[in-house]
Length: 285
Image 1: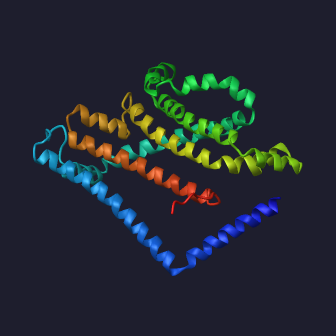
Image 2 (image 1 turned 180 degrees about the vertical axis):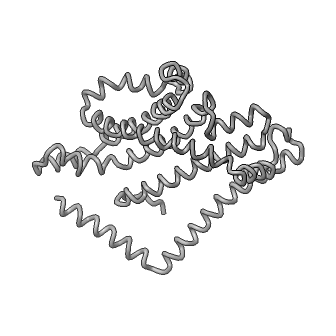
Image 3 (image 1 turned 45 degrees about the vertical axis):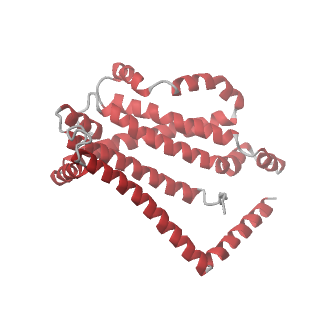
């Protein structure tokens, strides 16, 4: 049966390779990519243009929302002085460390809970209660338990990172095609082989979606964690400039945080495409 499945996959990829090899197809694909890129760029340029004109035309208070050119100038100044790199490096270390610890806990636990349905039924109410608890509301609790320092910041980032990856991993394992599991069991494979060869590949797309959500959560929680009891980091920098009414510098920090989130998201999307290249995609003609 495995040989039959592999043969079907080979036929599908051969058809795709033949289609891609056609010059017309390549030209059409390149044209579509350029068009999609231009549409995205146009949307961003339009938003930035509105941002620039609204304060200039005094449709909004320039103090509350400075022109984008002023914000960009402040960002260039922060980069040239090297101040932003100090805060950026601290934030990256905190976010990446908390993220990897969080998914390191969430993915194995999610596989275990998805595999044993009875355990998932027993623990699910507690999981739902924890994941629906506001991270910001729990931050004072982490401060009381771990004090004002790196430990409390790492703990709150880990807490916010665990739940998306955990829930998506559980869902991916539970929604594995039962026919695949029955076929594997009929061939007498062990539970470990079944988990490694069947369950894990089938659940991988859902797991990677949870990883992307956890990465976004680690960055969002990071901002809140750095606004209290911190002396460095992008969140601290934004809060510092806001307290001193340095509004353009504050927006420069916000833009930097947004660029960080977008970059991480695109990197994870690229990783997902590489790891799940076997997955057939539905194409609407």
